[in-house]
Amino acid sequence: MYELINLVKEENPLVLHYTNNVTMNDCANVTLAIGASPLMSCSYEEVEEIVSIANSVVINIGTMDSQLLELYLKAGKAANKYNKPVILDPVGIFATKARSEFTNKLLNEVKFDVIKGNISEIKFIGGFNVRGKGVDSFDEEDDQSEIIQKIARKLECIVVATGKVDVVTNGQLTYKIHNGTSKLKGITGTGCMSTSLIGSLLSCTKNSIEASVVGILIMSLSGQLADIDNKPIGTFKVKLMDYIYNMNSQTLKKYAKIEFLQFKK
Ligand SMILES: Nc1ncnc2c1ncn2[C@@H]1O[C@H](COP(=O)(O)OP(=O)(O)O)[C@@H](O)[C@H]1O
Ligand SMILES: Cc1ncsc1CCOP(=O)(O)O
Ligand SMILES: [Mg+2]
Image (cartoon, rainbow, N blue to C red; front, side):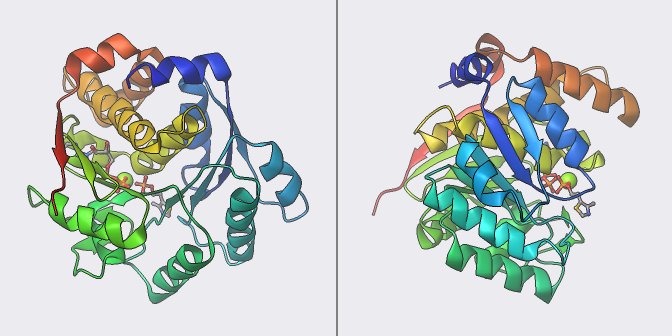
């Protein structure tokens, strides 16, 4: 599965983003760093045309721009129509009623291949009480994989929940990724960038669960390696991008700390 990172570099997929204007630039740069081509769009005029030529579509509700919500729905539906893999990042869904109503609308009208959020965002979608504030998660309990598996079965797609341990599951097969560093929470956008990484990998394989595992691992492991010398946050961010840019299948294989579980009925 780690060889997927080579495919992105070979195929240079076009990863179309409908995303927030806080982390948009970082998402474009991280997409380039793993060898894909980013395109960010806020245009109703081009939505059909641009989705039809994209290799995958990322939808991230981060800034809930009122002018763009209909566009996000149109883009998601177009992704389904043109059979393009599509990933949702329900940023801050727990923060307001408007966010949760809009996410429900997206979930009802678009079939997502992957839904990626921090653990609070994912648990909120599943109807659980959460400890989140704004766009950040404060749910730090150790093992929440059973809950996340249940949510994936309910949503009938791959669910990725990030935190101290990252969980990737389709409800049956579950990967728990034990890499990372808490410093990744000190930079806004590491979640959004993980979504862009998964979006880039999704276009290179039909195996969306492996694309999700590798995408999350690239971020978690790059953060872990960038934090070895415990530099302050500005330097850490630069090192993080360098590690993502230099990441390869051998390094992923060497350092990955992944547990694999299979759900038994
Ligand atoms: N306590 C932690 N220890 C190690 N890694 C963490 C921790 N919390 C988050 N991470 C890592 O930070 C990255 C972003 O996750 P998170 O902060 O949960 O997302 P978001 O930015 O969407 O809120 C993930 O790769 C995750 O593995
Ligand atoms: C701070 C903020 N506000 C709206 S979107 C955003 C960025 C969130 O990024 P992430 O979920 O990756 O931390
Ligand atoms: Mg964050």
